[in-house]
Structure formats: structure tokens, C-alpha cells
Amino acid sequence: MVVLNKIYTRTGDDGTTGLATGERVEKWNLRVESYGAVDETNSAVGVARLHAAGDPVLDAMLGRIQNDLFDLGADLATPEREKPLGWTPLRIVEAQVTRLEAEIDLMNAPIPALNSFILPGGSALSAHLHVARAISRRAERLVAQLAATPGEIVSAPALAYANRLSDFLFVAARRANDNGAGDVLWVPGANR
Image (tube, rainbow, N blue to C red; front, side, top):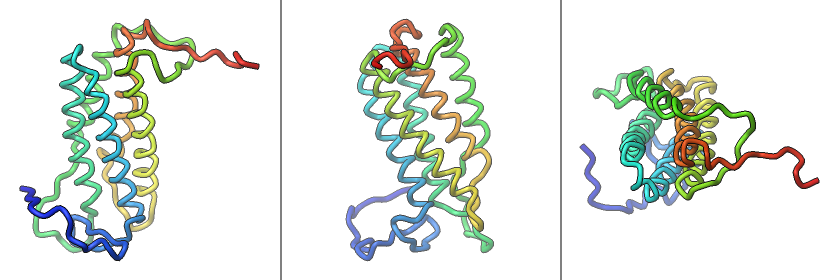
């Protein structure tokens, strides 16, 4: 259970922050950057949801994703160490990745295949989902970099979730553009 009864603690005034394990690290630590980008993604999804009232199925999917992103942030904020924690940390599990894949397939089924890249835009919901997708790609790059860092562990499901999320947001943006009918196609060299 999380209890937040005081918002500021002054413990970060020295440029450090606490991980879920109690360790203090610099605020620019790659692990902190990773879960910070996940938090940014969650915020962008929240803004997109302001425009999703006309699609309650998509809105429910996005709501589940927001909850999963808190799970992912908790996972990343709790590094695996040799010394046991004394409690079971929250981790992303394969079922969360599988659910994303199933939802991607469900949304993508009625959407025609692309024969061009698309520009972020179309409807307000689609544009906001593209912003969330771009932020999620940055989060994915940071999580992948963390996973490749000697001495750091990121589980395969956490890395897969970060990868799948941008795919979900791309397909969701196309769904929000009338299943691709409102997509704005890239025209290579159009303004030469």
C-alpha cells in the first residue's frame, strides 16, 4: 500500500532520489531516467484519454495501460540485487505483454495495411496518441539501455512491454483516425 501524506521531503535537495529499495542515486541515474520516461508516457496517455470519450473500448484499454505503466515504473524503481529485499517487488509479467498483443491484433484487424508512412495527426485523439507513442519510444530506448548496462537487470517482460506499447499506441492512433481513413500520409519530397 502506498501512503503519501507529505508531498515534499527535502531529501532530494542534494540531487539524489530514493529507489524503492531505499538506495539513494543521482536524479540523472539511467534507472531514474527510465522510469521517468515511463511516467511521461503515462501522462501523455492521460491527455489522450481526454479525447477518447467517443471510443469507450479504446478508453478502457488506455486505462489499463496507465495502470500497467505504474507497474512498469515500480518494476524499474526496484532493481534486482544480490541481497534479498525481504518483500516481493511488483514486476511486469508476460500476461501484460500478451494482453497488449491481443489488443493490438483486435484493433488492427479492420484497419487497411499501410503503403506509406503516416504523419502524426488527423483527429485530436490520434495526434495525442502519436505524442504518447513518441514518448514511449524514448522510454523504451532508456529501458533497453538500462538492460544493457553491466550490473543492471531488467526483466524480459518489462522490456517487451516497453517495446509493445509503442506498437499499441501506433495502431490505436490509426483506430482513432477512423480505422486509418483519416490518416495523414507522408509524401516523400513533397516540398522540394
